[in-house]
Image (cartoon, rainbow, N blue to C red; front, top):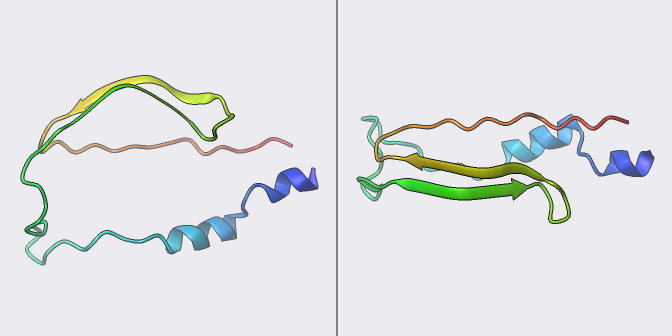
Length: 84
């Protein structure tokens, strides 16, 4: 069990890692994005599946979605809690 626990970072280690992630450039004081920011675009995803590791099971299966220019989206995820 000790070896299995060693593979999962502690809460303190996760907080430290997340607090040192490179951040995006801040918006301008007027609340507008920087001049180089794209004025329009869209995202279309077809048949996306994903897993946490190369040898793990898929956790997302065959997702399809389309985000139009100007739309805002939010992405949430459940936290994996290993049972020992």
